[in-house]
Image: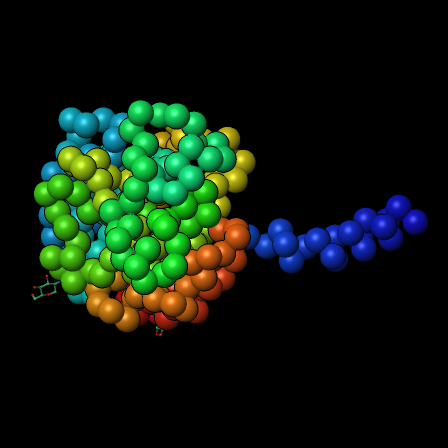
Length: 242
Ligand SMILES: *[C@@H]1O[C@H](CO)[C@@H](O)[C@H](O)[C@H]1NC(C)=O
Ligand SMILES: *[C@@H]1O[C@H](CO)[C@@H](O)[C@H](O)[C@H]1NC(C)=O
């Protein structure tokens, strides 16, 4: 009887617990191949991962394809980037964000979000956004569009994100707390506790095709609902990587 109850519970709750996409073999191969390989088509370099500001070896690289951009450092055997926590935007002190003085009450593309998508701003506790681009490097220069879909390989899983914020200075490797909790659910993620290893692959895509527009569920009540709304587009973008 206990077994039966357990099985019934599992079968009714399992769909709600499904909160990760598996990495297609091709993407897994690309992850392994490019991690140790120095970037041969750098778009901009001189960035750091926030942990060691004097290590300015992090580079925006387009080796995966001329239609995509990812972060990489050639040192220490080759690294991607880490995942510091961003809580900027609506509800910036909600959830486990806390009151860190670095929190800003708006994200970089707030004007577009509010004028086109019917919400006042991105919510770091709901929207899985990636912080990409810096004071000295705007990915729009190489053709990325604001609020386009990004591919994120983290914790041996695959998720889709939105390019939703930019960083001042040279700091890279940052994502909304919602995305960090998807990537590292057991790690006690909070406003001042992110993921320190430089093993997260962030890939942005060039061109308007990567913009989900109103196909994305901007008013989603949960991160997973939002993920599902950009999944089809994310899969198409993954398939373009060679
Ligand atoms: C793609 O190639 C063109 C022409 O060389 C270059 O201007 C552009 O910056 C490249 N884009 C990326 C993302 O590498
Ligand atoms: C995976 O890689 C193989 C070999 O490079 C290629 O033929 C195939 O089309 C790729 N599949 C996808 C889904 O990208």
